[in-house]
Length: 233
Ligand code: UDP
Ligand code: MG
Image (cartoon, rainbow, N blue to C red; front, top):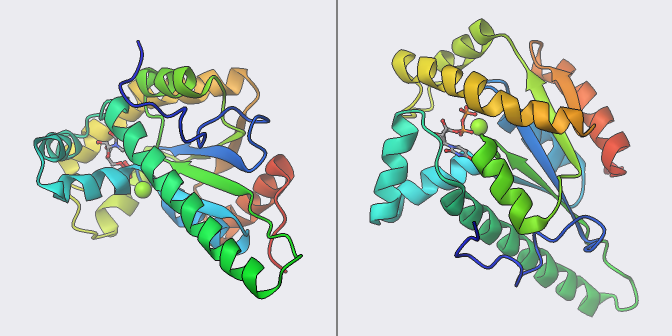
């Protein structure tokens, strides 16, 4: 099934190798496994790394006042997975915006000191997507490719539940009832996506049941070695 959104035009989601200026890294793990926290740390340490939280983009979309936004709000509060047609459109727009911001910045720098080439490889951390086989297949159909890497945060449910109830972000889905649904959806729909990429040798599994600092030591090392990214000095 072909999407109505033509992503081929921007080239942002082109297959690896065809666009040496960008890589996509999927960041997966159960609700509360620490995906967002660890992504922020990678952004701080590695130039060119951009964090795109699918959940954050969808939550922003719920404030659009559109029927589409209202439908997404309902799905999130029930712990359901939003169709890829919506999520991919938001991700693609966010990628294009990040790329254009970098281009602007590089243009400014080049004007100041001409002759020095700006290093502008983007590494997009796509946090919380794809969440089911439909999401995954849609990404694959559009890009004809796999991500460069899948970081998978492995964490016991009891630990994730404690973190979700303790984080107090006022999210409509951080209540006992929806948390139980999200865990069920994760096991039934999202774990198969991780298994799919595991068979393809794409997954780096991280023990996420530790202090954020300890988890990050592993994340930083694995990210650098598997993507070839160099940390800031
Ligand atoms: N969600 C979705 N598709 C995505 C990402 C998020 O449908 O690609 C929805 C889904 O309802 C999920 C919610 O947004 O339960 C929150 O996702 P997020 O990744 O922010 O939180 P997590 O459950 O990982 O803590
Ligand atoms: Mg998150």
